[in-house]
Image 1: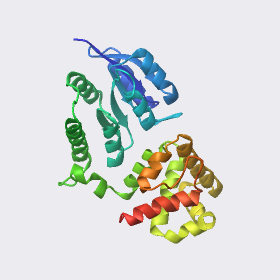
Image 2: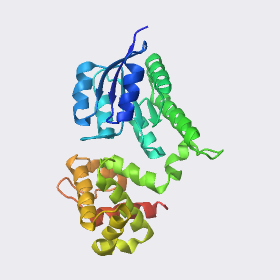
Image 3: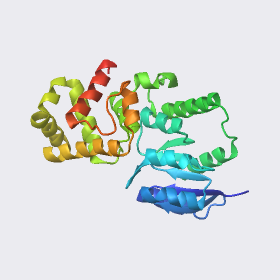
Image 4: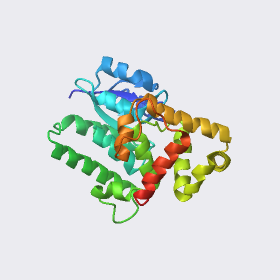
Length: 277
């Protein structure tokens, strides 16, 4: 039987060790390479032409969601299995809709990974949108059943409606291109939550909001301000303005326009409030 050619894109020492021990001498898996730096991964994948890429979403020097999109856009694109510590319906649904074949929450076993790789390489390609949507639904339903302690898991069709606040905010960040591994991601999410609970706090962003976040994360208010500003700049520099405007349903910003920290926080918080968070 032909061995499955695999490239692992992950900087976790634990995952590197697992892959080295379990895949290097496997009769089913040919481990081509392990890549730690997300910025180098696409060129290596293009050159080595694996059957499967095992991808973490939190990578140094690269946003995993953006890399996923670029991998799947390659000619004769490999299958992509996500293995990450990022949990929540927002991440799973977004990755699956982009074209990922499966989504594992770390830690995951080598046995499960091999079984999933074997399955996706053997199965026929999903040919229609209906088939693809059914495939996405089955994956998310399996994910929910494995992570939801409730005896009645939330139906897949209601994922967006019932997603908790943090996951909904995270989904917006993913869409507009704010990577999860930068500090401003967490600070900005916390700022939006505070603005939802206390809308007037956006009028005291320097005196109240930044210091409150700084106290929670054990840093300084000035570092919070800079990190949030950097997160917004990353989204704008990546040119996903159309995604930002589509979220809010109108032409909020142009290419050369960039909101202040307070404007962006207030805009997302207002959206959450209107949607009945």
